[in-house]
Length: 144
Length: 144
Length: 144
Length: 144
Image 1 (cartoon, rainbow over the protein chains, first blue to last red):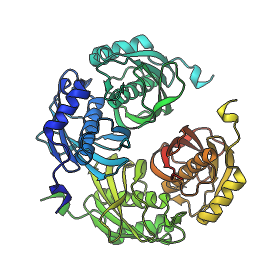
Image 2 (image 1 turned 120 degrees about the vertical axis):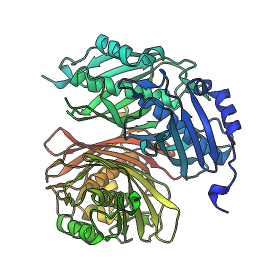
Image 3 (image 1 turned 135 degrees about the vertical axis):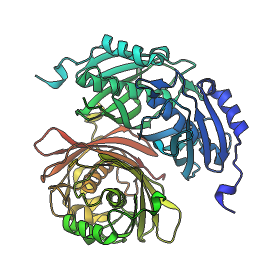
């Protein structure tokens, strides 16, 4: 069986509940979880006053937050509910200024791990296949 | 005369006004500007419900936003008021989990430029000299 | 027509000739070009005394050089022969220690550009699909 | 006593011997160790046919290797002789094209650690204070 076909260790509803419990500002900020697969997570964020910036575009920190959360989801899809998994490093390149429309991020794990998991995230405007940002990052997973 | 002694091309009050005009969510989110020097900017963020996460610590995206804003200030300190300068890449390493106290970021420019400026940012909890995060990044400056 | 089906602006033989002319140490160091596609380049490096390190594994700088060269090839596959295109930033994560066997890197462009092109590179041991390193980077393309 | 004043856990002569034993290509490639301090290492590389590239400048992979080795030295300056410490990630920005003269890198540790150590590296041409490249990176230290 292909990895992609494995069921995720955490589903959409459970990941949303975990975010609501531990980071209520996520849902309040307009972020939602669309899909969870094994080593894979798709999230979306609305374009609002909170998430925009000068120039009629989405703010960089909003895109970073979206990438970080999607990677968190992809990590938890393989290890289950571990709220204290934390980002240890993240690299993001902003490729184009997105318009003020919802952004969607797709994260996938390139190296699963018990202590460190590494993956990449592509961010696009909905209804546009061209990437607006690309990120890579590592999550540290607490032992025990 | 030393570079560090040059007056910044944008002062604290003008940088705050620019942020209020173009990104009102910055001040609303608890971010403030403390110092501007030539190629240098110090900013601070409060620890609030908006900026924290699971584990009694400040959220990674809050630290990213703080780093990004401080670097923006450091860039503008050399080129003046250019609201449309945008981040092109950012790399951040989270070194320690900060406690729920205000964080302070100090950005400094390592390579000024007309089109691209590059710098680094150290983030610490106030009253603690040990860094909790370190970032590097590039800003793209629109021509004309 | 799909982008992937476009002919590359620089073929394998021409890219090898360009490397031999401008960086003879590349071929001498055991690096070879295997494939060029539109926005895509596959390169390989031998495991030799020059490229190995403590622990019976390939040295990190060898993997960096392989990633950098493959991205160079992918950039030139879209803009043709521009020897003075140069790396402006590169981020590499080493995911597993590779054995002392040839390494293969596949680079692909995520954002083509006239001035800046951005892409990613996956490195694997030959005959093993699991990645040993992943990199992302930007090339600056001289105007005119 | 200040950290900077502590004696390094590995001196210049011992670091050179370790490199000669485990990575003889380092010295053969024109790299030398100039200084070791606590959490600090200065290395240099010659400008030769091996280390140059198109455009009369030092090759990017040479600068990466110099940064990686200097950070390795800075890590070992705090943990002593651990040949199997390995780079887990590295981010490098090339700021200016250096002329064909020796390059010097100064690495310093920003976060020492038993399992992961993080630091930054500034690279300059000798006799020129302006940085030509800046890197940050993490070393993973084997347990036991």
